[in-house]
Length: 148
Image 1 (cartoon, rainbow, N blue to C red):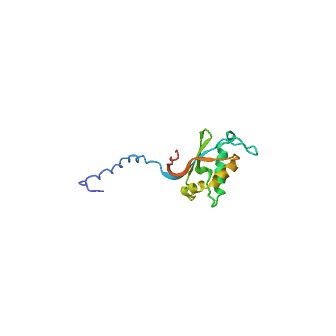
Image 2 (image 1 turned 45 degrees about the vertical axis):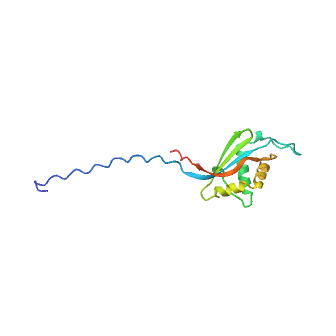
Image 3 (image 1 turned 180 degrees about the vertical axis):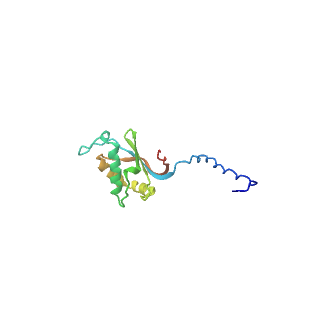
């Protein structure tokens, strides 16, 4: 027992106040390739080819993957890296985000600029021709964080 003249021990310190939430950070940014395709009106062909209206975005996605893989050198991209938008008026935008461990966005862009890429796309989609509305470019895009 402590002697009666000893003062009682001080109360334990109170816990620190909670930290304020961290400031909102901008979403991370990653390199990406942007491809803007235009499907010109079909010219009379020796064999019937399908109309653009019959195409769907899943088929465009599959054609993009095959056309990149078929190049020299092949460039492997996955569906998970792509965002495809129907811009209307026979135009499609494909954004391919650089994936960890995959080819650099600059490699993807360089491959997309090769004439054989568009030729293979047209063959895969069974259309007479595909052109770019604008040349393929590499940009930086913000990736939204996953929702909790």
